[in-house]
Length: 286
Picture 1 (tube, rainbow, N blue to C red):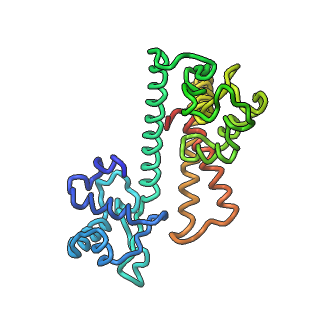
Picture 2: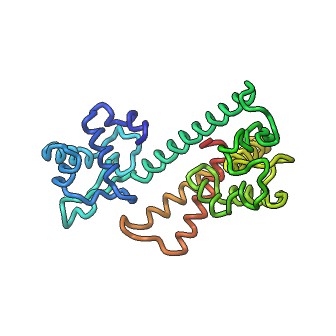
Picture 3: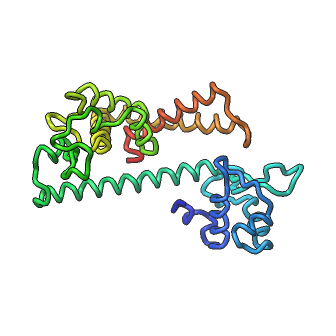
């Protein structure tokens, strides 16, 4: 889930807090819990009278809520005129994005720790520095210390063994804070400088294409950030806010069960991609 819920106005009531997180788990991708109170009770193992009480409280205005949308209400009935069950979690998209950001940060921490461990092993002499495990220009180990760590060995020459297809690269970095444009650009740079079909980092053959691509994108992001002045950062920050508002507005223009038309889907994809790119440049996620 996400730790921000401990700072919310319902945090002091641990039972209500736990029930609300249960609703978030039960919701579909649009934040809809299309269940009766009895069904929720059976699924969560919470007594029915308590479920009804929690649902009623979560529909009430909360002036102390950190998100004042809908007067601080957490949930609302989907069809209040025709039925008394089926709820929409009002800020579900925000909770989902927050959880995704936290997961990405945890994945990034794990990768950084792995890279540091490899460097420490090389520095302590556990892995001899050879053509097969040379450290790349930015300090990361791109060619692996042993044949088991990479399909690329010192004697290998088969084309494609040390790099992915573009589709594989896009798929691998999809849930990470890099835009598709960054991934394509980095992929094309390695492709343009291959030798006999093998990706190279300088004069050293790449063994782990994932580490190599990520390190190149991190380096590019640092250069981009260092290369812009304070005024430009403010401009990018405002552009990020505009993208964020446009995304929210576009989502709000559709009902709970409506699908976007092709034009708006394309626009949403462009906005999400640009917002992720600005996040990466300004270091909002990384």
